[in-house]
Image 1 (cartoon, rainbow, N blue to C red):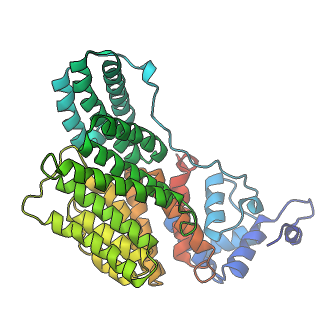
Image 2: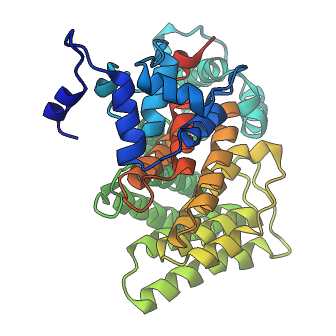
Image 3: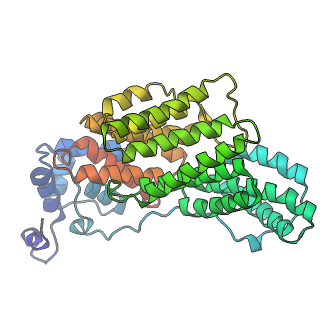
Length: 431
């Protein structure tokens, strides 16, 4: 509706009849002829003690009795997909997740005990998510700062000893930032780790840094609203994964092969290949690359690396499913995800990602209700495990669907929009 068309909803005092705007959008735009449809969607999202009825909605429309309470009015605007200004609402500030990263110079210093630092490294790789984010980042930055001082100003023995620890801590810190959704910060620290590893000849650590850097770049690509055209981050991720594979091969010349690391790198390379694939041959090669991961993971000598991600067969199935999505094989993707049991409480973020991939797969099959169900399941997990990256992925999906005429009128999609609003702007709905 063009702005001048609002004139038809002006009252004698010059104010807008918001009730009639609601009615117009419900009946003429969404084609929800029965007011109970709006009432049902609103009640599912609002979860209020006193649910509204279809008759309540009609009174709002006929008597211009639209709720004054901002959260209720915002829910109505979002569910009906009404431009906020048309209901007298000012645009909400974009949701920003507080960044707990601090300056190293503000941190308390401590004496380095290399044995204690090594033990703590293993402990944090296993349980870092159990600590408050600010607390763990403070500790890591303090250790990184002290290690950097020793590398710069210590004697030769100290430099050699602490360079290796510093590289480890940079990788860990970069991975935590990546997992928290601060991809650019992650890339910065992982690049420092990669540069140090290449300078000192730590091939395996360099492979980890390059892999996790590629992971963060892939996450950034996932945030783009038009991923098919905005591919610079995807290209960067491919380069990082290729470098990681080269470095893990170099490391294998000197020590036993790190199979979890190798399998993760190969899986992501295959996934990126799937997104770039054009010909039938390229598509087949991408899937075959990912399948190499399954062979590695199932080998008898595959053992978890305590200073790396938890790589297992679920990892393979999720990447394989997303590759099918990239290749527009929705049914194959859904079938692949049946192998993910989602039972490990320590890999909750992985299951959020699984739900998003599954939603994409159902959309390829034009199964909107199933896709929305998966998206809502992801949102339920996000409430307990906030993630800017995942919320943005779901928001992009929602807005794309709302701009698609065949889906725009769906009450299920409207419900998803309301639930997204409550998470993206939780402060608006705080009691």
